Length: 452
Image (cartoon, rainbow, N blue to C red; front, side, top):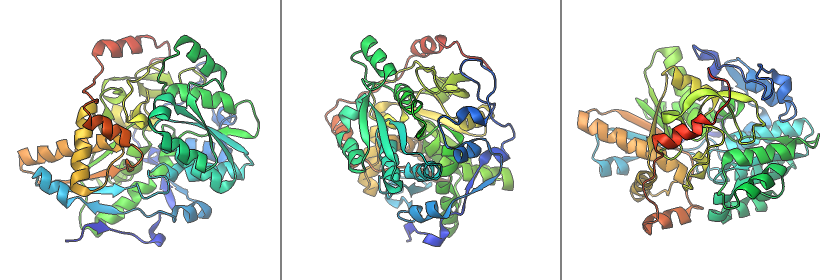
């Protein structure tokens, strides 16, 4: 029985898919952080090159992928799609389970899908240096790789918890020439302020974003790059789902359910948006489920309102599901999912009930990750285990209901640099953790941003 479905280099998509063109309700505009008035593309110019700003606001259904970007993609793309026969047997489910494996990239995750074009467009505009944040280090590694390819300096602010727990991610970034700070750091004013107030903080993506932006805005030849949340980032990631549609057709199948982990939205968007296009264009009814941690449940327990993308309030206000920009998540190992808010496109889709969201606790996801690794051989990144936990729940539902549905999920990266996380699990140091409603409401109550 065929297990692996491979495409050829010529099958790398020539365009990214922009779901905004098909959305029944378009996302609300970003607001100026001071005036609270809608902003235009020019307001983003200090941070991003103009071509990325155009992609951020475009309503064109397809955006051409530059040939140079496609050439670099061909180092690892198209990525394989697998049928998870062994996992199906372990779960004793009538469901068919497939996974798109993004761990074959040079950095081991889906993140280079957007890092490469972002570095490319910066290079075309003469940018000499890019600053960024990173949670678990996947995004920082990807941008370091991309910047090295184009001869651009890279400065990364890595959430302190992951900086301490994932030292080899830092070494990867250093190998590709990047300078890496633990965040909060003494390299920025916002970092020094937070360290003075909370010297023992484990950091957050919101804090790291503030530091990266502060570092970027003081130099005309320096720009900032974001690895998730923004529209152009999710746009670039749709190469994943477009390939997956071709591969599912090769398998003679099509998913009933599409699942991906959720931090800011790029992972989930990359796989699900092209399948949502089939819902919009062809009348299909594919369920798309975002899987998030119960310790950072913005989609399942947050509020839909305008909020800052960073802790210091330096970014434009975005209409999103959020736990509040001051929220500092618990120190879970899935560093890439420890973000207080959700991208505006995904937030609007969820508000319109065109997608679904579920949350899993810290212990459940590692149980799922180990189950998958023992069945399929690949050790998943802690972020990816959240999607696997949802897959298992859906497969068990199929078994209870006697339904032979097809499930597709994004195995967004391997966990080869996350052995401390698995060691902690085996040592019994990982325990169930969920935020209480009181904790969530206390965080949301601090918001003084516009309501929707």
